[in-house]
Length: 181
Image (cartoon, rainbow, N blue to C red; front, side, top):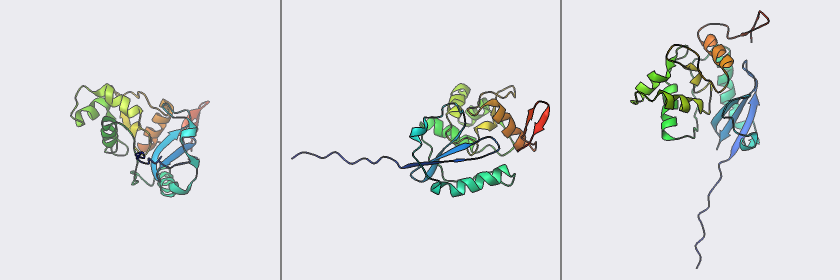
């Protein structure tokens, strides 16, 4: 008698693209739960063929909460997340979720919170691999000197997100003219 290998199931993936003040956002769900939010030209963005079938069905609540956030009516998200990463990455992402709206932390402060002083570079690498930007607020992490360092979505977007959350317009300047959302 021959043993039959156990059946393995491939996670079902769906995706949709929504407009935002920061450009189009690609939302990806794995087994119906948000697992990624990618910006255009984002560093560490996987190929689109890995996003699954186009289907807006799993994203109604995500889109609603993002709309409230961009309108200035929401300061924290209440969504289930399916975050795939190493245990260390997931611990960093959990710390990111604790950073209050409108505030920032340094990579070193996050390393301290994790009980790993001196691991600011590792925290930075994990931060850069965050698959759910904006909702898991990696844009709220800055350099020790207060400088804006690294952001998978681009430093311009990071600056605009931080300005938006601190009560600024979050717009951008083009040819000396302030462009709002």
